[in-house]
Length: 369
Image (tube, rainbow, N blue to C red; front, side, top):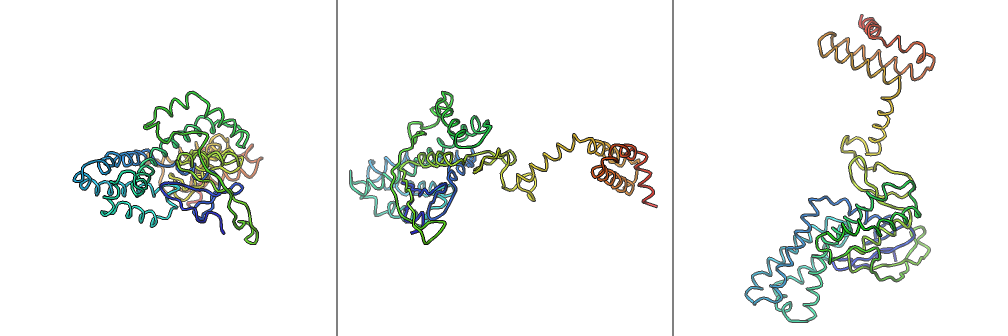
C-alpha cells in the first residue's frame, strides 16, 4: 500500500507515517518539519478568532448535557452552529486542510442531528462519550495551536536565528538550551489555558510499523513508522523535532515575514515565495537585488554615476534642462558607467573626467543634433 493511506485523521486524532526525512499525511508527501513550520504562519488576528471560536462552545456544552430538557433543546442548535463555525476555521490550517472534510462533516451531522439529543443526555452512554470526546477534541485545537506557535516563534527568534551553522548538532544544542531556559517556560506559562494542551518537548504518542511500497521504487517494500497522537500540540512538536533531527528547521523570511522550512545547511534570509514589494520576483530574488544595490552604492563607479544622474534629474525638475536633454544625458552617463565597469584602465584614467557635468551635457547635445 502507498504511504499515508488509511490513517483516518480527524479532529480527534492525527497520524503521520515517517520514512527517512519525509512524512506522509493523507497520502501526501512532505519534508519532515513541514507542519510545524506551516502553522507558524497563522496571523495574530486569525489566531485570536480561532481562540474565541474555540471557547464559545464550551459555555453551551454543559447546558446540553446537564441542563433541563427545555434548555438543552434551545441551546443544542446553537452549539451545532458554533461547532460548525469552528470546524470551518480549523479546516484552513495544516494538517486539517488536508483532511477528508466530507467525512468530518458527516460526523458532525451524525453527532449533532436533532434525534441525537436524547442519546447525548443519557449519562455515561456510549453515544454521550463519543459526543463529549469530539467536542473536547475540537475545542482544544485552537489552544494547542496557540501554545505551539508561541513556542515555535520563541525558538526561531531567540535561538535558531543566532546559529552559526544549521545542522543536527547545532539544532540539538539550540533546542536543549531553549527548552531548558527559564525565560521560555515563564512565557509559556503565562499563556491562556496553560493547563490544557501544554507544550512539552516529550510528545505523547503511540508508534507502530506498517508496510508500504517504497517511494523510490514501487516494486520494493519498506518498513514505515506510523505515529499517532491524541493531542495536537504533540503532533506539531514531534514534527518539529523530527525535522531538526534531519537538519530541517523553521526560518522567518526577512522579506515577507513568513516562516519557511530550510532543508540544508545554508544560512537563509529569504524564502521562495512572491515578494510583497514586487510581485514579479521571489523574496530571494528581491533580497539579492537589494543587496546588490546596497553593494553598488559603495562602489566608486556607481557612486559617481549616482551623484551625476541625481544632479541631472534635479536640473530637469527645476527646468534648467529639457526632457529630451535629460533622457540623452542619462543615457550618456549609463554608457560611461558600463564602459568603466568593463575597462579598468578607463575606470582609473578617463571615467571621472568624462562624467563631469558639463561634459555629459555636451555629449548629450551632440547626440540630439
